[in-house]
Image (cartoon, rainbow, N blue to C red; front, side, top):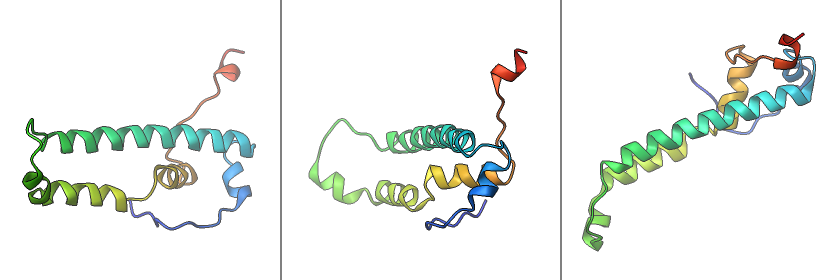
Length: 103
């Protein structure tokens, strides 16, 4: 998915359209952003753990360019909130309201 990493203005009517309420829409996007953030953090930690060493050597820090490149790749990615908003507006986020299902 190609997502523009820059800040863009959103039409609040489009954001609130799926739920009928802007606050519910923002809450759903926020929850999805947390999921994305946790997944990315876990993925990054797994990749960086491959480089973990028991010896803290100053030379190793300068030599490990791969680790730096991996970190820079994740820093350049769009923010989780941007990804979550795009998914929500494209109808790719599943959500439900448990209180409505109970009735």
